[in-house]
Image 1: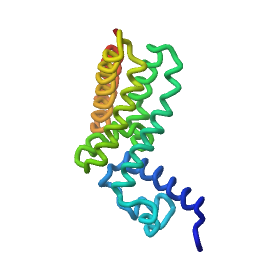
Image 2: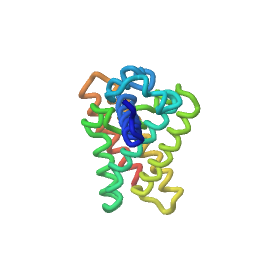
Image 3: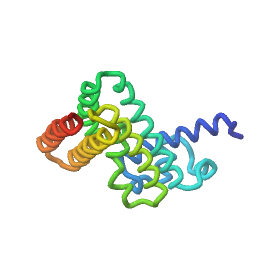
Image 4: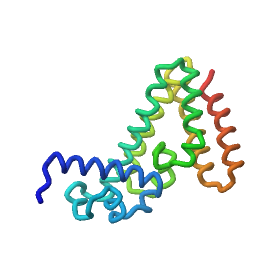
Length: 192
């Protein structure tokens, strides 16, 4: 049975979405093509008709996942700056975000993994990092753009670091303490 162009595009989008979730949950090397295609409800044979390689898919999935993440946070920009920053920090360091990397920020889920990947994936990660830093800078206080960008780097570094560490520990109290301390530090870093 021949697949229509529309069905082919729908399948491609489903693979990208599925890959984004699985990569955030298991890492790039923790997901094989067979498992990925099965999770997407497709056969492995259809993969190479859609993507040049697993790396090609990983670049697309990383960008898509971070695009969704930014869309989730974008409405905060309509709130007063300090309230928006506080809400971003609270949501980012939530217990749900800690326990569900597959549904969260690709930066925190894949930062360590990306460091060991080919340059194309690092470039995509860097592009997404810069975009999210720009958004966070909009929520930070500062006398000028440079100061807001510097504060955004401090805020995002604190958030990502705390989330990575809280996911890595098996001690719930320690994880909660990391998130709580990072919340206070990030809020302070984003203010004048």
